[in-house]
Image 1 (tube, rainbow, N blue to C red):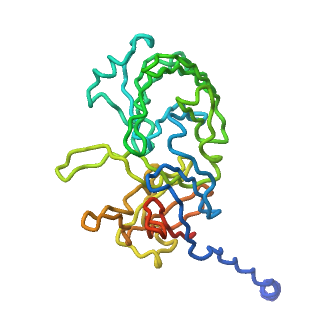
Image 2: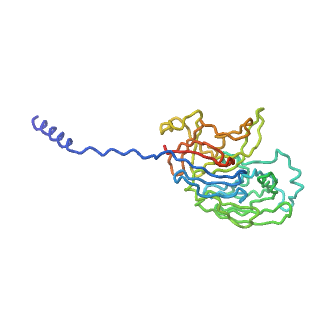
Image 3: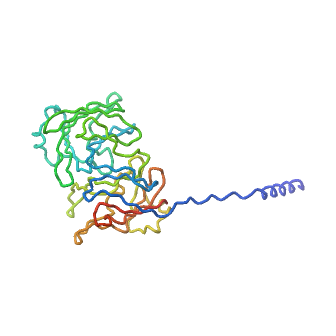
Length: 337
């Protein structure tokens, strides 16, 4: 019994001599940062932005490209440049050579298809160009008429007919022709895993374009895009809007209404559900005041964004005008949670 008591005493003495563990230092989340990007008064620029670096990484004209091909290994999706109000019409299995302006003029409004702004590729305009046969993705051979949208003054940019000829999980092969001159161009692009997409302009034939920065470097792109909105009577209409699109390579977001930017902290993450929809930030942070004939920012809308690096940020928009009163310059503040 005495030995047992002595053993406990020695054990307590040894434990008491072990130094306390060093406390883990709280992660320095930094202060509130602010930045602005310039899209131009006619919203002709797209700006890719990184929260981690607090800077824009790349800017391009929205007219630089028409369609983009997914570089993701498990994806064979094709998307439209919705910043130009592009849309397509599925002409089915008609021969490519037989599609003319007569077919274009016969289309009804209901036949035109837009890309969904959520980024859900199952509902993308081109979602049904392929099928799986004997374990391989192959083109159905459908022909599409592509409306290339409009420029900043509303002038139509023309129409092309378009067909996916072949796909082998790494390479897309397509053919297209302007309906005015009917001159065909074949184009082949290979996936580049550094990027979300490779890009094609129908005007710059045969050339792969680098529109976005590497997919692991940016969080949002500020741009004009096409959104399905509803009138006061409940009728749906497609509109061009200006906002922020999330990087589809893992960025997520959520909106919090009637919130105070200063008081939001990491505890909010337990109360919200983040979405992978690319328009999770979108355009609702501003509205057009008809009486004042100007855009105004809604002060109590806050966004939570999970950036591409895995860090969470709170985001708040403060203005849509530059110091000279020109629209198209979003000013925003953000802070790491």
